[in-house]
Amino acid sequence: MVNLRIDSKEVEAEKGAMLIDVAREAGAVIPSLCHNDELPPYGACRLCLVEVKKGIRSRITTSCNYPVMEGIEVLTSTEKVLKYRRVNMELILARCPNSEAIQDMAKEMGIEKPRFSLKDEDCILCGLCVRACEKVVGVSAISFVNRGTGRWVATPFFDSSAVCIGCGSCAYVCPTQCIGMEDVGGIRKFRKWNTEFKLRECKVCGYHFAPEYQLEYMRKKANLPKDYFDTCTNCR
Ligand code: SF4
Ligand code: SF4
Image (cartoon, rainbow, N blue to C red; front, side):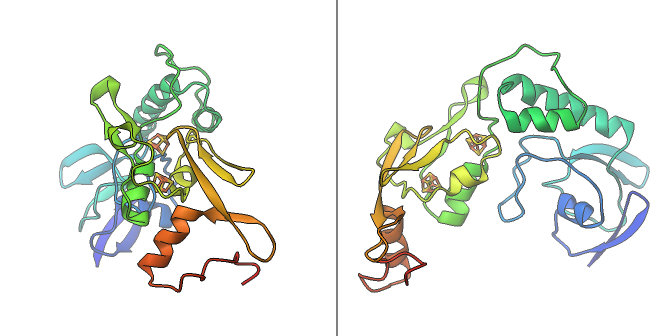
């Protein structure tokens, strides 16, 4: 275990735990758009900045990818911390000014209009979709392409049929809801990946409950009988 101080509260945390999780557990309010405690940290949105003091040294750092350390003091809401977070939020809002989720979060942080020139993007490059697809689903159907201002998320070689199983985990974790998944008439569509998947129809109630590819993937992985997913969970 590791002992540290967060906003003048003495805290004991497990070695290797990330500061953001420990601080939130201790009651601190730390915003973030790219953090999910089930996924590896990425430090992309930079909204989770905190001030860490170690001896006479002090630095502002992202807390999502900062492992707790013995004896450090963490300040989560000083003027300096809030100011740096607001600048990062302004940059995110300027990139995606039409995203309701981003607008709401910016408003909560006291920002109505960013000072930077406005873009018309819907993705904040948080990488949650890429990490969920790789680490939770185990498929790696999407990844970052290009660098710098031309960076975005896409299917490998833009081949939309390659490995995606249509599970929807990427859409579920996306903070801006820009992946655009919808199930209509027995088909699941992903606007961003430009993909479509046939949904399996339950043999009992007729409900289209999950993509055929996803069910086959799960069946093979768990070595289940061929007819295991013939019915939906409600009818099983
Ligand atoms: S829908 Fe496709 S891209 Fe999205 S998480 Fe599932 S396998 Fe990955
Ligand atoms: S598509 Fe969504 S989850 Fe993926 S990087 Fe962009 S904002 Fe993040």
